[in-house]
Each structure stands twice: as structure tokens, then as C-alpha cells.
Image 1: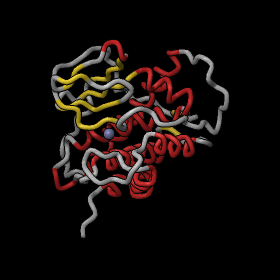
Image 2: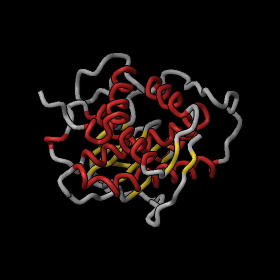
Image 3: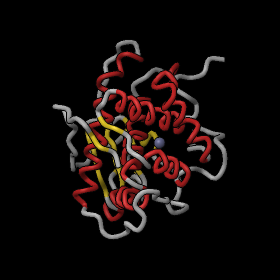
Image 4: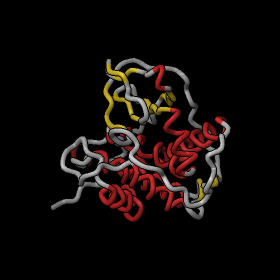
Length: 238
Ligand SMILES: [Zn+2]
């Protein structure tokens, strides 16, 4: 369980509306869930969790990640202005929203460019929260936010493995927010995140831009951001 310590005045609103067309820059993973996320803390929590509890967790995660990037983006990217995502859109499989004229896929989460919106299947979030733990909600939000960051930095700063860089950004934001005392990690959060990165990974190592990478690729990338912060997510200069 993550305990949030502060609320920003500019807490991001969860906007329940659909925006226009654009392109999906990257989802959380591809394909169906391939296994059970093991919750190392609360076993047997498959009972119904109040929807408000999950919504509150998502809102808190949005707030934490937003506070980090709002405070630090310009330190790393030449004073460039930072624009946080402007829409936060939960959806259900029976009413899929559109991005760039294409239906967003069910059972996923995504960043939509140039709408600058984050979208997620509410059923996926519910599943991850109940079976994976609250830290996974933070991971999903911070990963998709990483794609928002990618849309605002120059190509010089982009990794070819954009999905892995989003994992790196996720760690940089979450560990950076913890350093800023916006929230604290609690026992079990690391296991929740590594479990989720494993379950939501590809079967094979990263080879092309659409890949999310295998479990070790994803955990390596997350560790780059955990240890190196935002600079850990700069491309490696050969
Ligand atoms: Zn992604």
C-alpha cells in the first residue's frame, strides 16, 4: 500500500469525457493478460472492492505523477515547457473510445497523442488493483504518463525502445516523487511492481519499436529510472 503524503493544489481532475482523434503512442502491454498477478501482501482479496476505492487510487496516482513532472520536467529538458495530460478517460469494453480514428483496444491502458489524454479500461484497473495491489495502479499511470513525456521531448532524448523508456520514466517519476516526499513506498510495493512488469511483459526480448520487452527487459528499464532518475532514461551515448 502506498500512502500519499500531500495533495497538490492543481490535483488532476478525472475527466469523464471523450476527446477527438489522434494516435495511440503506446499502451501498457500487448495481448491478453497471460497470468495471475500475485499479490504478496493481501492474499485472498478477490472480494468486491468498492469502485470508489479504486477511483481514489487512480486519482491519487495521477496527482503524484503530475506533481513530480510539473516540478522537474524543465530541469532535464532544457527549460522546455511541460504540458500535463489534459484528459483522463476510463472506458469499458462495451463503449470503446477512439484515438486517431481507431478504437482503443479493450483490456489496456494508453496515452493518446495529440489529444494528450490518458485512457484505461476500468476492468483492467480493477483487475490489477484487486490481484496486483495498489502500487500497480501507480505503475500504469506513471507508464502511460511516460508516453506523454516522450511526446514533448526531442528525438535526441528518445529510446528506440519506447515502451521500455516509458517503464524507465515510470520509475523516475515514482521514486522521484518519493524523494520529494509526495508519497512513500510501503512494504510489498516493489514486489507488486515486479510482478506486474512480469505478467504484463512480452514472451520474447525486445526487438522492435512495438515491443514492450520481456520481464527482465521491463524490470531492467524500471531499474534504470529507479537508480538514475530521469537522467537514467536518457539514451546511452556510445
Ligand atoms: Zn506503453
